[in-house]
Amino acid sequence: MHFKLLAVAVAAALLLVSPARADASCCDKKDMACCKAEGMACCDHDAIAVLLSLDPQLNPAPPVRQSTDVWFQRPVMIGRNILQGHYVIEHDNDRMARGEPCTHIYAFDNRTKPVVQFHCTHLERDRPAKNIAVLASKGDFQVLTEFQFAGETASHGVPNPVR
Image (cartoon, rainbow, N blue to C red; front, side, top):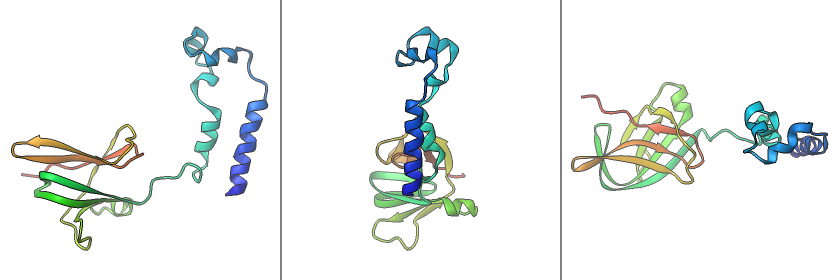
């Protein structure tokens, strides 16, 4: 790991001391026409960020199993179940790969048997700073529509119950 980090640092240093293109002087001024019109490489991306994104150990994938606890203050419908109180939402990519329900919701004090389980729908969202549960109002109760873990672009949509 230390060798890879050293190799990335050396490569970044070489990029910084290498001669730049003559037209690269406008890259620090993003509103100049040369950067917008010509789509110069120096204006399109950061070379060090590209180097870091190439090594999966420096930019790791999300964990296989993620979980968060939630408090439902009002009754919340999830599928055909109505929940209220303290619960744990867990998403498991291994279950999803096997074709099993990837999302399990457990009572906070009992993680042996899920009270709700379902196949989520993956949605692309902006990265939130904290875990999010999206609720929509429906009459006297709310409906969980999606949840998302902090720092992830993937959000997990909750399917509507079949009537």
